[in-house]
Image (tube, rainbow, N blue to C red; front, top):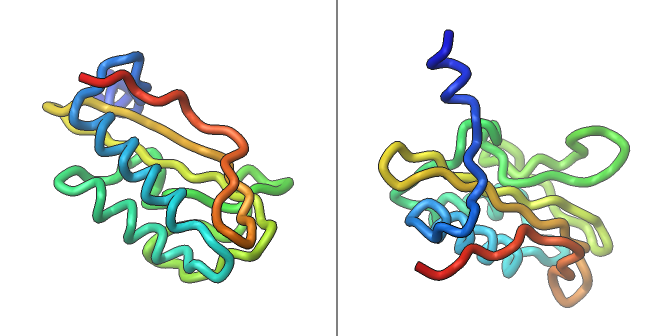
Length: 132
């Protein structure tokens, strides 16, 4: 049981720009750049998965790299490979990317964006990691 709980903790970066942190930051940058009206949620998931390689998405995120923001804890649409919804103009979304790797470390980064006509307007974002 102790191992189970240890696997569930997320180490949020505290200034160490290790490989996991650098990949997570790059994936979040890629997600922010890809947000625009009409972008597909599955496409955003693919962007993050591509940038995260060779790492995989942290299991606590449930294969999703974001979702809508509303009254529910996780509002439609989920940004997963299994869902392909179009993002709407002026929609507000959270973007979340995490990596957990025994050798590279763990990191979780996120941003809240408004989907403006010209692309993502970042309303809030995790602090950037320090350069290695």
